[in-house]
Image (cartoon, rainbow over all chains, first blue to last red; front, top):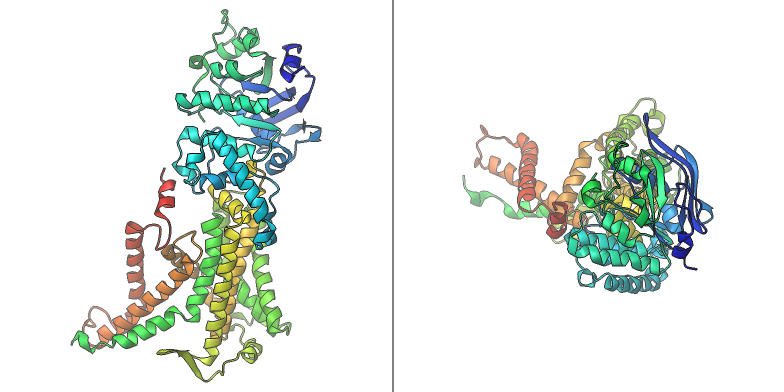
Length: 287
Length: 336
């Protein structure tokens, strides 16, 4: 049974347990002054599928992402990533353990060539130690191997023509592709994409979507924040909805739009028709 | 009152001598260190003179206080600079880059003021400075202190020629070290942190630790500059290490081009050439009456040469903001 098929038997309720979770979150909270930005009782992320995290503006999605990836530390609670305690760990430790994220505003290293951007992604490089760096023979063989891996990925993401250009010369969409390709250099088990489609030219959206799907086909778990409901419906296997810092609903993408909790969260509690979740209602969060 | 009366040969000889003298070496080493900090790791260090002072005092005290041998004294000087980097870096490098800038500028002054304080007089000899350390180094020197050495018209006395030779060897070694590091994966991580620290962290790099390493490396290279200063002047005086000196190191770095391995050396040589050239030319112009004393007299040349250097730097920033060897292409990426 594929991971996606396993999910079909899971009840669509918030905090429900999954057959094979890669990430388990318990009682995670984060407050900024008096505002409780994140207050998640329980969440499990199924291994090997694409999970979308949606919610109205200010729901705490990005804060939650930062907490999970070590870019911010929760006030309380804990997270377990693939059997290991993840909360309290720093971002670079989590990345080395296989949880790699991208950013809503892309972080291409503008003054490094594209190929150097890619090579940076590889973990456990011997030449990254100060004294080993002084002796090229200690790392040049590994460097060659990393470079050929980087070249293969650049070809797959159709960025090989940009190989030796500065990353700063790339378009917004190309930067998204580069960031995704670069994260694959780290051999991730869980990829966390913060608004992968934001600011991407529509012509590139389809290609980005295909790349996200191809991650799943390789057995990599994907979790992403997104506003565009067409995208969410198209690629996700499971949708988690956040509002006011809490997880209010979970379920397969085709049924989540008719969930009363979700409708209330997006449109206010006095709305009585089914929610037409389209980009016009949900779009436009750029922070 | 003719231009022909000006002794261009003398002016050029003086200028070239100064361009390669140990003072230029001090500036070059300090600027190589700053280049590691700012050009590669993106760290804003406005207290490089503090690292230079730590190197000089570490070496000097090793001999006057602890009677170590000269080679160990150099190692102690490097350790002093490294400890200074730890003191500055440990609390600030987790914060935004401007915090390091604030802390360094203050810390460099603190080093100087402590060294010249009366409390420290038994150790650092206060404002008078350390003088008795030079003997063991003179003994190491293959050059006779009183003889004249050099190439053609460019000459040094043996006592200073030792500092010049040792200094340029240190510059060469520092450049090799920086060049090797920056072409290695270590350098790639450091440059990535300069571009975007969060991106580096998201890819599993411990940004804090790399920034600390870069701060130590650049600080130790600056410390070597302090040691060359001590050798050349045969003294370590606190008031040599005044805060404005840091900004001359920055000037030298920007002149050469930020983020290019040997650009700071070029910057230091050009800077010392310009300063000496303007000073000597100005002096002769006044002496020959080509500039009337109602406009400027010889005692004012010291200030006016900095005006001219300042104006030249301003023009450089307008027409060639990347410095002599910096990359315009890279600079343009910042504007996007």
